[in-house]
Length: 148
Image 1 (cartoon, helix red, strand yellow):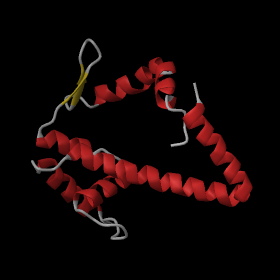
Image 2: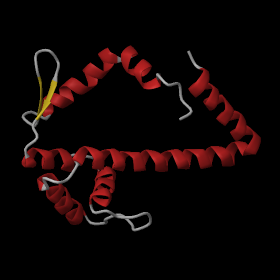
Image 3: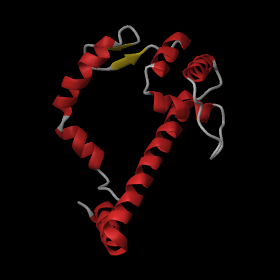
């Protein structure tokens, strides 16, 4: 909330060539787990072994949040601390036919974004004070609801 409703679409549309330059070589490094068709459609191999490879290639902090979501950790229950724990959970997750991996990943990413956003909000509040923060919030509100 607080952003222009088409912010992401505007950024992507204006930088599509740059994204191709960055991501096509990365996707080719993931072959055979991921491949591009001639019409630039991304095809992802989804066998349990491939899912495991995808999961273990994610950043470790994100893997911790995924493991936390998968194991049903509640607020304040802590994250897993050893790489062995994380690796084992990634294997379990990738082979669990009942696991909704996209939903777990969305939840883990949501947690990371929320934590980062909260930290940024608190930092902004402490550095600009009450009136500066209110002015900034009002500007964000205007962008979100009264933009073209």
